[in-house]
Length: 421
Image (tube, one colour):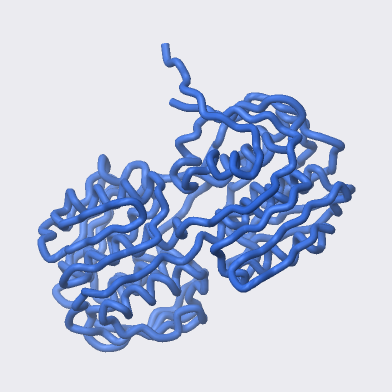
């Protein structure tokens, strides 16, 4: 077990390059199951979730070579449609195996996924989509079993906007007979990225990035193409917030600025300087952070994954701010950790009321989930004295070389092993 030790009060300065998007990678890798030949995926982030998925594909029978940020996958040799609990227990994105295996074999058996715990996250919209395509669904002893004699295209209306269900239905529908229409579809950048990957392999998907996606089924995905994962919107946002909170001056490179518009707008509202180029954003912080009211929403709204880091910044703002969580039902579990550092936050259901304070003070804290872990690191960067962040396994699931990138910006941060007695 590891912990991160930070000494706060140092403005971040310099340049940082953003890695490939975690949320895209964990969907594109399972999508490779559907390809009837080799494919090459580039710009993969070096994170635990990616490595776990690659191991799962190997266990299922795919031929995989993985080196640095590139993976080559040939799923023609894949023989199994069963992913056990031991394979998926630490991986939320494992539910994409359901759509991919169903599309390939017309069968799938996948244990309920693991990952971060911040409230009940149902898969009812996934099941609704699979059933609409002709699959029978059984859930027994924590295992989701899907089976279909034939998959047929259908019109599917999503009762709630769900990124996971939108992608899973796309995966199951690309080889189904006829046309599938997904209405009220999620518009997130990684939905578009998965569609672009599948289209490069021979799928016929139109409308990704809008609320109506149409998939015309094809007999096979020939493969042979190369796909590069988009930059990570959430990693970029985390560094933008860290730069602003520490009163720093940082150029965040290798990004798509349009993906950052909701965050950039809020930072401007909070009196932070934001400069934008073709593939970079420069953040110049201020000692006069203004209060703001934030509500997380599906894209293009403010990302729920940036809610914990922005909360740290609101702790230092002048006046009273509010955060309304519009995506998950229990994403304020990290608040008690910030209170240990002197934050004044009151949670009322899906809303947090944040009273600005003069400063935070270093303390031992833990990461209760992936993005909350990043928030604890941001808090350590701005706090007086030393902060120890425990449960770093969560952070490692989604951020590539996080402490090394922060060191490159001047942060005083180190990783230490914890003696377990």
